[in-house]
Length: 342
Ligand code: F6P
Image 1 (tube, rainbow, N blue to C red):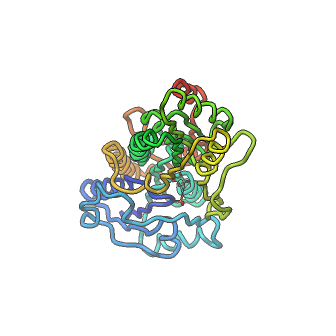
Image 2 (cartoon, helix red, strand yellow):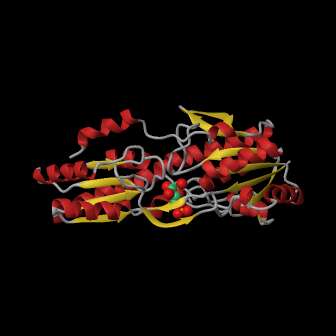
Image 3 (spheres, rainbow, N blue to C red):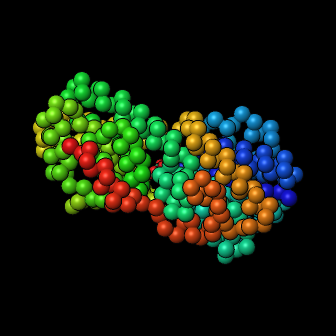
């Protein structure tokens, strides 16, 4: 048996731990061989692959990024893309594919598996933690830790200058990073994509924080929107899955706060720092277990499925279900944080 492995979409800490788990168990327990397709779906589309065995996965557990590279290539949008993937799998004598990715990568895996008979197993990843079929995706915990540390540091400099610091974190459609890091870091305002915000209310919280002689920290998800405006964009270019590039709401909000309150406001955009570097212990643990269970699914011939975390168990769910609905922040959960606003 020869198994192809690829990592697609935005990278995130823990990808290498999955690859290592897959290869170690596949080689040691099942005697499998592996092929690493490079840069997500671009690899099988363009016959770009690398050897993947125990030597290639040695030492990669704590390393961020992915040794296979990643891209947002969408083979379903490429003329003859599905056939090219089938031809590539035949060329490399690959019997099954393990696709490690988020909503987009797994959406392609579902289509290839369910509609085109390509045996795929999915592994969920995204720092945004917005896949509904799994309690957590790896990468999220690391991103929250990085954002929390940044907020901790911003408190002291904000207080020294008595200015507002707005921290923009990632989170395209879901405010999980903002909510978790904002609570953990003691933010005074947390703004998420699921609930439109009122700039006047934000300014009222900012003012009340100053009245208590503290400097306010405002955490905002890149996808958060003002109540009577639209999402703030860096530019209007789209990726291969049709997503716009977010970021800009932090800068915009700081200007509005300054204008309306007369207090100096600055912005820190954490950006890709949240996705880089070594994974947290939790993410290494989760990613490793996902890898072990993904190769078990291949061994069982259980294709068209994704591994998922439920409580402390790893279960298998249909790939199609995994991408059917985004997991967003429940209003009740967001409301809990409100006691710390202002
Ligand atoms: O989907 C994960 C994510 O990190 C989002 O939070 C963010 O909007 C996007 O990827 C950024 O993508 P890119 O790295 O392609 O700019």
